[in-house]
Length: 349
Ligand SMILES: *Cc1c(COP(=O)(O)O)cnc(C)c1O
Image 1 (spheres, rainbow, N blue to C red):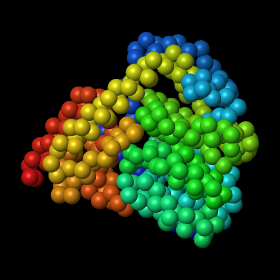
Image 2: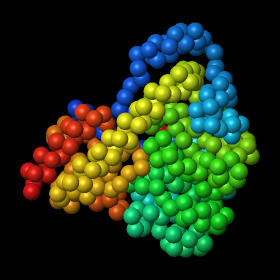
Image 3: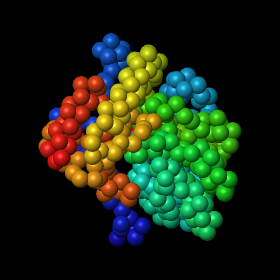
Image 4: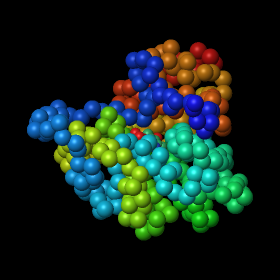
């Protein structure tokens, strides 16, 4: 009765274990300030929920355009960027054509490809978790690959791939999707390319800058790509409350978001420095709002959980033996994490 394609797929798993300090989902550690919440409540009160939302989310596309300096005609919104990943897998090439994914990375690229029966070619990352270009080009030239996904910076390793490697893969006639979910923390972008050439698509999201609860993903591309996405996009895919709230926050909470991002970056650098001094621990530099660490001796995930700190276990992934990903939290949360880690490492020294 069920599709062969889905036999080996598993539901996307997220970390729901209860804990005192949660550093597992790369959310912003700050909720909106009270005065902004009051403004949101006032706007929501005026909304007639018996009506469908604007199917094009015109006002929100404008607000996002202002926020990042992009023309709204180059923007399509999704119910999170996860939805947009599905759409890209539908519109680029045929389902019989392959999708290239450097791994380990964000699992939705593979799920979003396999759901439609597309062949997936994963290539393990090379030195410093950068793209293994010779291996990647070998696969791309021997298989029919039409689409590639790059998490930029990469979740969960935290680094930015070499721009040149992405461009060389694009030169093979592959449409490259550059997922800039952590753009606010890296400052690096393929935006200019995505506005000029239809073989380059940028994804961003409001999820990592304080609005994960709204589910608003952003696709930035040429008008040609936007047209194709709109053919397959579900109508009304961004809810009316999400449109109203996101508009309010992006227009009136710009300084708040900027100051939160700044704090998180400062804390990321502090964490990196402090973690680098821990014996028996490897820490990887990050351009995102999380840090990847490795211990060869102890089960970091379980030992930290015993201390009330929840992080994301990555130790089952290729190349990431002994690794956990730690979201940068508030300064006091990071202190609790550092203290717990210090205890855990000393206990096993
Ligand atoms: C968190 C994350 C997203 C965000 O997805 P949403 O569906 O917009 O919440 C997208 N890509 C990567 C690489 C991420 O880490």
